[in-house]
Amino acid sequence: MIAEFNNTFPLKSLCCTEISDKHQFAYDDEVLKKGIFVSANEIYHVHIENTTIENYHFVQNDNCVMLSEENGQCDFVIFNSNKIHFIEIKATKDNKASHRKKIYKQLENTFKYYNEFLEKFEMKEALAVFESVNPRGYTKRKVPQSSNSEKKVLFKTKYNITLLEGNYIKFE
Image 1 (spheres, helix red, strand yellow):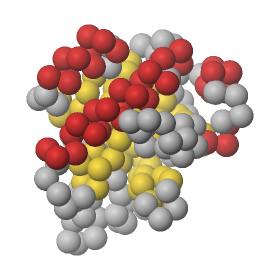
Image 2: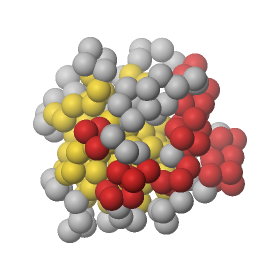
Image 3: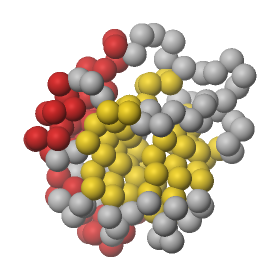
């Protein structure tokens, strides 16, 4: 699937990292303006588990594949040959309801941008990550749950993408 990514997004191969680890933890660093990989005992935004024998690809979408699109774009795109995840993170002390609209717009904008590449996948998910920093210095794993919003229905009917909230994704 990496060949298809490179054909769809020429000159963006530097935005993509191949990962073979069973567990990977990503943190969206506001200073560096990109995702970095951290250990399980550090603060992280997303826990990725891979129980397959196939490697997967982590794409730094924000400020790499997509540069300052109107209405924004999601932070990361993670995929293997079968499944793709779009991930938008809002780490804030504010109420998550105040950020939902912006997250949904950023995800939809990214779906449109990735439309040609999206068609190649059987399974498609969008993960909205609403994080507060744990006072003990790390984020606990939260199993994704279906979003209860009308956007869940819209994403499924319009894009065939399942909308989830949490901070854990799994390739199986």
